[in-house]
Image (cartoon, rainbow, N blue to C red):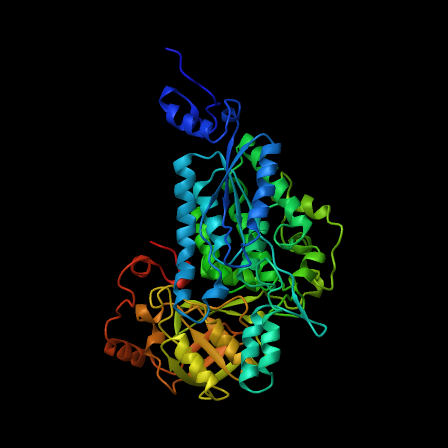
Length: 560
């Protein structure tokens, strides 16, 4: 009996369309308008996180349309499918933030399940915000089929009285409002300016840090990370990415072929050189794990220590993401770093970073400095150890004032971000204090909430040069000041931070990489043994399952 063969068996999707027993799927495809000729072509999943609830993703339907057009032009058949995306900005300061970091695993898993169920030959991944890009990178390396990312791009910076602002600065202005330095009318006016259009927040926060990482890993086209959401360049990149994925399928070039250990370490180096968010220390180990690579917290600290700091982008400096893009973006950073590391590594466009850098037209060295004029000999993140954090913790040292790199002060302990914010705004924090926020780690939160409301309150109330904050929670990429997070083990695991009491003297030395309390190991152990067993705050649903199986922050907060 004659069989019905439509597609070369080298394509994964041949399993869906070939043979008499696949009559059902073929009928469905024909019902959607595909012809017999179409069934011979590669099937490309266009995985989109477009939604209508936040600016980082509201425009991605248009970017997806360009990507699909590119797939069609190159001879593939695109199928757009959607998964979830959460904006950290909408979840700040309430229990919704508990769901944000856990959404990374949901997104990665949803992509894996859908792509494998339908046997796509290749995927274009379209997303933009904090947990979405890491999740897509995790899925790409886990699936290891031809893949390319198109990040949504930053929004334009806000303009007010000749100054440029990022959205995060509005939270800091709340402190000025509380202190009477800003009128309610001016504050509300600023609200109308701070988010001027679509795109991720206009700063080197987590969204843009991870977009930089994706480009530096070679999984996006050059210029993608900093091409703004409203720019024609972003649409051109999306269309070209659609064409590129068809070539990658034809040549069977997969993410693990590109993201080698050497390439991954280069991506880490790029992130550290531009003031990357502390959240990258959660995401990069999680991504590495999916690619069968090695990237520990210690590795991240070592690479940062060895990497010159080349670009001060908000919140670490005055330059915006627009300045960064116009200065040459990631390609210019790679060109600068070529003085100290090898960038001759292959990317999805079929050229090495070295070749792409050679074609760079503009490199503004006042925005992205060459190595010999680096702002500092080490990168943005410092890993600290001590008796409060045996497994490590992190600080964005590039956003710490020089006078706060060393600090000693009494502990002021709180069991949640809400308690902390109330204390800051009510004037209960004194200059010199070390604020301690416990029980906000991956298990304790659960979900390891960002402490941006607390850290922004500190800045707004004028404490950023007198008062430090330490926590087993995490921070927004917008956080600045002496804020130390990801303390591991967390309080819920009965790490030493759980033993702290008001008045305990805490020593911070960023240059030395230390964080410790003036407590003997015997006293810490005695206090920990006296604590009741930790009980998970959420007892049902996804967050309960997450809390029971998530790893420590120093391991990337991945599900075991």
